[in-house]
Image (cartoon, rainbow, N blue to C red):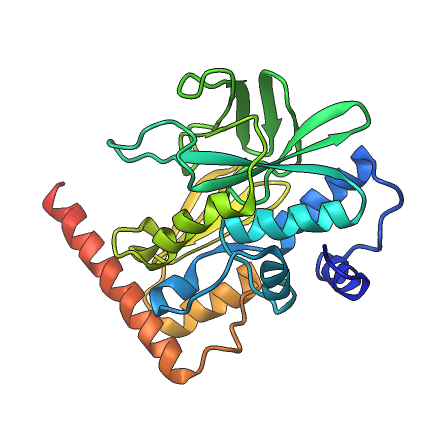
Length: 285
C-alpha cells in the first residue's frame, strides 16, 4: 500500500484533489487524469537503465515525472486505487500486436486491472498506450471513445475469459486477459525479458504515447503521429533538439536525469533504428 504522503503526491501529479469515497465518477476522473498526464514510454530500455515493477517503485517513478509500460502504469495505478478504497484485481493479459506472427492469448506481457464499483465491474487499463480513455464496463459490447471504438467480447484464445478488441486505427489488434486474479510474481519474468532482451519489441524502438479525450499522440522512433477526429497526421523528426523538445512538450518527459552523454547515446540509437527502418521500407516498396 502507498502511504498518505505518496497518495497525496500521486494525486497532485494527476492534478486532482483526494476523491471522496470510491465511486464510478471518481474512478473515471482518476483514469482520465492518469492517461492524460502519465505517458506510456519505454525510453530507459534502449539505454539499458533497469527498472523494477514493484508498485511502490513504479509510483515513485511517476512522481519523478516519468511513465513506463503496462507493468509500471497499471501496477502503480491499481495500487493507488486500492489505497483510495477501490476493490481492485490484477489479471494476466497478453497484447496481440499487428505483426503477421502475433498470436492472441493471455501470454503474460500485459497486466490488466478490473475494479468492482457501484454494482458494476469495470475494465480499468491505463497501460495500453492508445487504449481506453475511460474505464469500460466489463460486459460484451462496443464502446466509442474519441476516434476509437473498442469492443469487449469473450476471448477465443482463452475460453471463459475476456478480449478487448482495438479499433482498426489502433496500434494493436487486441488484448486477451484472464478472469482469475494474478499475483505480482506472475509478471516478473516477462518484465525481465521485455526490458533486457534484444528480441524485445521495446529494444527495437523507443516510444512515448499520451492519450487525451480527442485522440492520441504517439512518438515511435523518429515518427510523431497524431490520431483524432481529423484523421492521422505524421511528422518525421530528424533533429535531436526537436525530438527532445517533443518529448518534453507533448509527453511531459523533460528527462532531467539524462545527462548530455545519455541524450546523445539515445538519439544515436533512435536515429540509426529509424534510418534502417526507412531503408527497409524503401527496399520493399
